[in-house]
Image 1: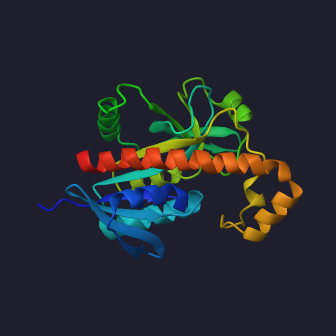
Image 2: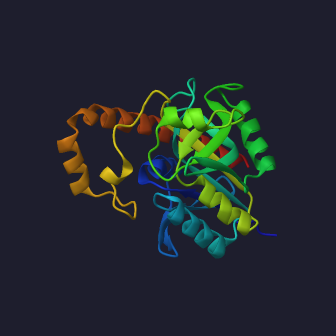
Length: 255
């Protein structure tokens, strides 16, 4: 019997481009209006969908992916911000648990496949870096926007191991759970716990979470002191993107 494709979903071009550079040949297409790319890794057929930022877009993109392909597995990936000290830039975090944060309250979200997550963690353990090298199992905390890490660290329950902040995983997990499709989630750390971002998301993006050059320029004129931080974050994102692409490539070839 022919095996179904593996679906990948990420929000931003910076999260996707390093992977596309590694896979070489790919074909661009649309998945219900969402930008998508189809390619092969090893014996696996892959469809990668870019959702755009935020929970609403992630939900709709994941549902579109499931409706089009009914994938045997969805991999949600991207960048994240570390909450606890010790999780460094470029490290890979694999989700054991997903929390949705709304109005300072947390709710557990279904959807993560424990079996596939264990398989991925075992693969990383056996990798060239050795056990525990450059990757952690942790808790993904889906938030609506840029959030104070100090405040989040104080609010999170004690059992939230190696927490990282991101904006889409809970939404993808909900769609995967509804569609009865197993999910694993992987994030690379682009900003450490000590890096409190000096801007709010609405200063760069419109209400639909599309970046607006005019808003960026206005914010930089008002807050020139954030320019070094933005340059640092750009460098860190390149490191995170390459590490993420490396793990995803091996994962797709060995699953």
